[in-house]
Length: 381
Picture 1: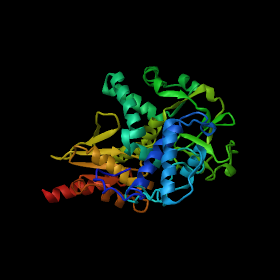
Picture 2 (picture 1 turned 45 degrees about the vertical axis):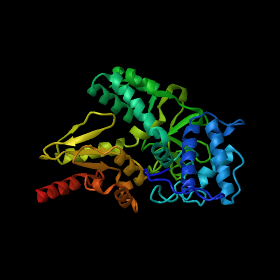
Picture 3 (picture 1 turned 180 degrees about the horizontal axis):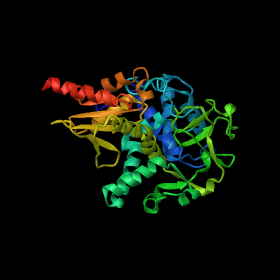
Picture 4 (picture 1 turned 180 degrees about the vertical axis):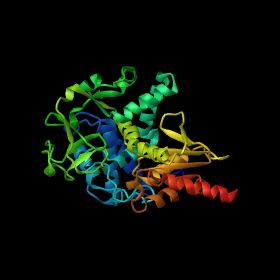
């Protein structure tokens, strides 16, 4: 797992692990976790293990032997390692310039891939879940026929990570949109059910699981941190909600839940901030929501919205897909931008030539940052 295309170090002496071997293993384990977590009955895997899991286990054993540590003996034990061993563990030694220290690949409560795990896979070979989401959206874009129909479909997906049978008979249901997007949904998987029920977070509306695999009791006793949802950082002032007939519901594919649903709240907040300030904008064509501001003079100013935990990987993504605008405001949730070191890590990971063109901001700071950018342009004129 590398942030750039730096050249390889000289070949190490016999018996020494090559530089970056731990980081590469961390990336391989991330891809394994992301892939296997979609398989029913993960904990019941028996020999022979799936090929990617066996290779990851073999490589972990080799890395442990090189490091003088006792290796995991099975896939379930390796899965547990991914839950408790963070990126800065001596086995991986992933630099903090790549991934934030303390990052694990499996969530300690939900025992499902962490958001950081999915971000790591998307940075790796093949593009991971991000590439899968882009492929699905690209196909939807082609099938929609017009940009407006595609935007309607994308908005529906962002607002409906789970669709219940009764939703299809509610006022305002758009049958044409549903006919175009229903192939992107599937039945609720067994590994996301708890005592036969499906739980979802009241904040992000994404799947949730309690620590003890029991349905939480409504009320204050069920609102603690002993629950996981795919959003991970949602407020815990209410227990997960229930769908008691999971066979009458469908869930959006995970890559789209992560890639499209997660940033939706931030996207809405950013647009609301622009509209309150009467800042004119237009929606750009493309797979993801992006906006171009109007009345910005000779320079083009765009807005892109993300919800990514790892600032360095976000910077790497934007570097590899450099926006064409003269300046792009990269909007992330306020809580993320407020984390210690997030803004600095993002800026330092950008090439020097992009640091003035890509401005990290939040829905709360979007309009003030836009005003500052306009004043700077006037001063430079």
